[in-house]
Amino acid sequence: MSEITKESTEEKSRNFIEQIIEEDLRTGKHGGRVLTRFPPEPNGYLHIGHAKSICLNFGVAQRYGGATNLRFDDTNPVTEDTEYVDSIKNDVQWLGFQWVNEFYASDYFDHLYEFAIKLINKGLAYVDESTSEQMATMKGTPTEPGTNSPYRDRSVEENLDLFVRMKNGEFAEGTHILRAKIDMVSSNMIMRDPIIYRIKFAHHHRTGDKWCIYPMYDFAHGQSDSIEEITHSICTLEFIPHRELYDWCIENLEIFPSKQYEFARLNLTYTVMSKRKLLQLVQEGYVTGWDDPRMPTISGLRRRGFTPESIREFCDRIGVARRDNLIDVSLLEFCIREHLNKVAARRMVVVGPLKVVITNFPEGKVEICHSENNPEDPEGGMREVPFSREIYVEQDDFMEVPSKKYFRLAPGQMVRLKSAYIIRCDEVVKDEEGKVTSLLCSYIENSKSGNDTSGINVKGTLHWVSAAQALPVEIRQYDRLFKVEDVAAAEGDFKDHINPDSLQVITGYAEPVLKEADVGEKFQFMRKGYFCLDADSTPEKLVFNRTVGLKDTWGKVAAK
Image (tube, rainbow, N blue to C red; front, side, top):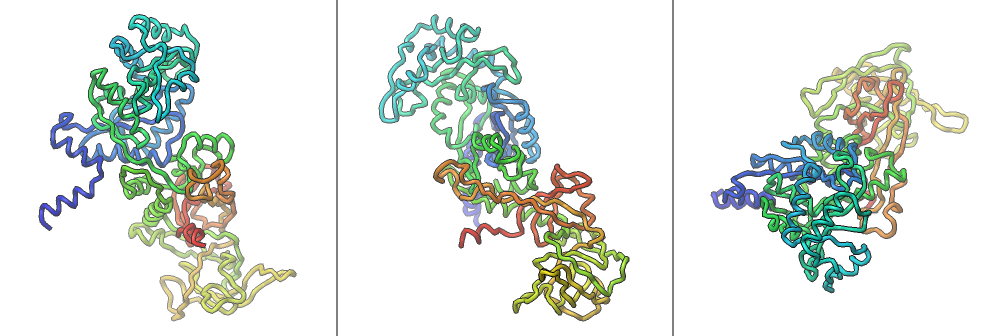
């Protein structure tokens, strides 16, 4: 491959953010520095969409020898809480990233106040006493220009006096605001004298009652970037109209020229990404909390058994685009299957048990079989599995009148028990109503796995557990929270589309080694799917969450 072709291929493989950074580094912009930031508002738990932003901001900084600040946009004391701050920090670190500085927009309240004073002194901001209804009328529409507020031409001295009195708490909420003085006929409605400060008598989780005026996001965001000398301010596409105000503030305040770049947010099938809607699900009891394993929150995914590696891989696969699109959740499920296949220990768990009595195996005898923990991991080792006269198999693994290509248990038919012996079904035991209650089988003594000299070949292999040592476990089978692919586009209230079968709780019987499992530990239950031990577990009752099935079954359902 020629050098030109090689460089061209590498250039195409880079996303547009990386291309911008490389060009800035080439030209020496910002002194060759790369400093990004992740600026969540602490008003809820992070979700998979935030994970994409985290991976992008921290990832590109790492790739180019830079760093990332974690900055909490805590400018709305009514909705914010330290609970959310703590959860956000935990989620970022769990994903595998570490910030160089931890900041809060509230750290800059004094700076931001002085910036507002500067705009007033330059004749670029004024105090408005119009009602919200009057302001909405004056704002105009996308096709009609706005009209000036009657307070727009107040003197600098009057505006300074009123703004100080706002700060001192002399006015009620909603009676006075500070607006930037820009252009009421701008085609960009955000530039039609936007509000930059409002009055809120609310206790702030960090500054207490020091302030009763708080900056709006659009005023705090760009200036916070500038104070920290962020080189690349990366945000989602809905902030494109806000970029003009971002640049206007920086230019007129004559501060460090941070630059905003936008990428497509993550929209995922069969879920919602709105914090407001997720909060509704929590508050109205549709889910058990922010960390409910059906939620798209990072804490919910973690509790369900997703790994940081799988989420980072998913974010890498979907890439960084300039246009919004809807990503199939099956890709996220593929990424976790792929990772868990490599790292999850295999265990045998029977759901819907059918008793099998091995008539030629001595009563009271317990024989130890050995089974691989993970065939994908050469260093995974072996575990001990007890085998006895009575075992449980799946009811679905028996058919009294089998079809032609049925290779599991049936009268007169032989199968292999995983890591144990070949058995033959000799007799079917039924109750008075004709329901099968147990099977009487015999085992082939010289057919033990790893030392089979029987010469018998069977096509079916079943998982099983010894009845005497079986460990009762609760299994929570989680599925997609919504029935429709594009929830945002579906008619009616989004809650009308909740999947009533998104959680099914069943009992299973597990091999006893699972008593040693730790909370969060991942397993493949053979032929069932991937599961992890939930924090609700007690020594008396282990609870396992299904992370994902072994195969994507939703594609088959959709095709019907």
